[in-house]
Image (tube, rainbow, N blue to C red; front, side, top):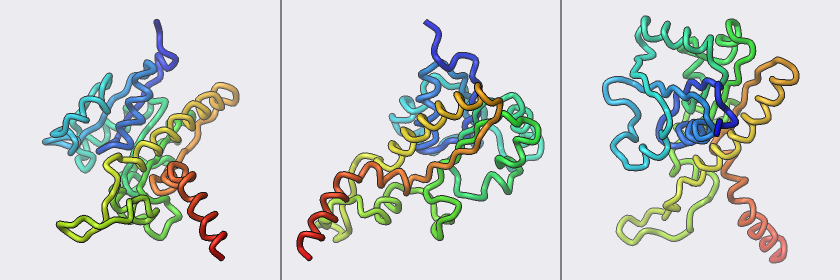
Amino acid sequence: MAGALNNIKVLEFGQYIAGPLLGMFLADQGADVIKIERPPWGDPMRKYPGFQVWNRGKRSAMLDLKNGNDLETVRRLAQETDIVIENFRPGVMERLGLGYESLIVQNPKLIYVAMPGFGAASPYRHIRGWETLVGASTATYSGLNAPETGGPVYTILPISSIYAAFLSSSAVAAALFYRMRYGEGQRIETPLHNATFLAAGYYLCLLYTSDAADE
């Protein structure tokens, strides 16, 4: 049976978890996902078993975005792409000439999904989106200290990356519907930091309710 996203082309610049997980969701629905990886080793997660899950159903191309010829190849691909996914820090794609404003010149119907650790308007936008850093900034850890290091104990689950991928997938579906009706693409930004608050909403409500009761 044909997937809901058959004939939808996706260019994924995802690495680690958040970007690749969104690409996996789209590939599972039939989208043709091309994952762009840095030579010579590709996505740093390739050495972990989870890579096979988060990158199932995709094609892969090793292209160096700092190489002129490879960069031109990527730009040509982007002209025929429906969706671009990237989870670099804000400003990285713009410096490469692959930001939303640059790509829509040739492809105005493009849906562009940015998934940084912290949003473009955040004072922490220059910080990489590691789960531990996002967890520290949102207090999503147990509050206990590890006996061997004395440091905080973080959840074993990549909550921030997973929720960012969930939110982005629903946003992509809405953007595709909008494009079908009005013929225009959109830029979507889903910072891991912001997505974490949705994941931790129940806990935070309990925390603030408890604090208010104490006052």
